[in-house]
Length: 295
Length: 312
Image 1 (cartoon, rainbow over the protein chains, first blue to last red):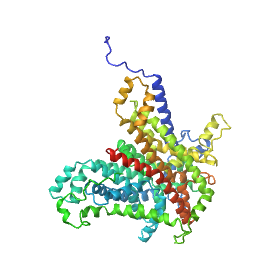
Image 2: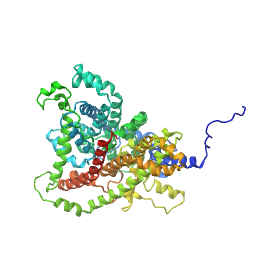
Image 3: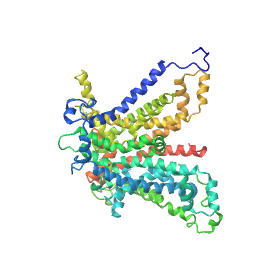
Image 4: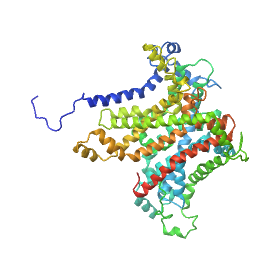
């Protein structure tokens, strides 16, 4: 090692006041945000006697997975004791068709609004965007009547339709903005070659818009999985999604409260969106930034 | 909300002009039927229906017996509704102020070219992936008086320490604030960070050359430049606040007593629990009006901006 004159800017000291404040703030904030996750995990791995002795933060002395098994298999909702698995499969049954139908319809909407505008199309789109902000409460009851008339109320299809309707504003916006960035020449060339509405969509637009489909899927999977209101109103007791069942398990007032089972159940319900979140990373941020209005 | 479509021709092919106007562009119209139906039947139709029936005396089923503003009189005479309004005001102001403040500060901190930026961002944002039900239940447990924060502080030695939000009529709404902030602040941070990254870096160089300290640059240059981001964030948070429902159901269920009731829950309970449709619809109409009061000026501003410039 022989001394060489340093070039460039003086390197910043690692422990400057600025850095201490900056990282101090970030770390304290990070602890606050991580705390509930830690508490959930820790509580779900403790036995009830241990919970009664300690507090929410104390780590488990004896790790047990029994609460997880009970939450999944035999926790009681007040009606029956079959655990969260019922709600899980209901949620899956709601999720898959809702995601497919809502995205299929919204992508075609976005495509039509970008390339095939017709008289009034922008008006409908504006109404749709307003719909994203209107409180659901104003539309809930008439929708119940409509679905009842269609003999769909209290079925899986009712929830699927409702998710499609209320997901439409933001998804349509997402796809419209995406297709707006596609060069018009591409569309014109296809038109000159004689391709029609569906052919251009299926053979040209679809293959080149996979990234935006991924964003839409992330958005819808987390949104629909986390829904409570529509599930509780439209699905009917037999089809209650996982969030509704979870709330019934935890907040049902009968019997001794089993906090460890409750926390295991809560974690189980949050698992899917968390996994989607951790896997998707930046795409999730893109999705919520676009889907922000869903609130 | 770009409605200025006068430049877009209904049909791009001269050949199509010979067709009947309604048949022009037919596949697009057919494909857009679900959108048209949703816009007209659900968003306009259902809203209008609810507003109209809020003037009737409907109980468990809708009926056309109009009673004028009676439902609204009862609504604002009901202590539960006034409590709900007060609560949403407290919740709304706290959630807005703190999520904007903390979200912006976090975004600024993350924008300092720090290490582990991705890790920090992931940590702040993960609650946003979780549902309000999950959020509410976790915080119900953390705020549990026998095992949660109160007990921990007592265990340390402060045996008289009182922090029992969930059992307090006065403070239960702040439990909702704490949980709501935990869930949503990361999202505000993400929007703010995107806004900060969108700012021309030359501004920073110019400010440095002029010797302006960083905090002043933020306060007097960057924040004013981020006005559109702030306004959009504000509208998004506000419309989320009006809808708050699941969180209340999971965390406090409106209690103790009616101390943490919210308007959306009032609507749901009167609609499905108490079979008092007229009341529920009057309450939801009030909610709608509130949202429109926030929304229309914003849409107007947004619309004007987009007409002047390109997409924001």
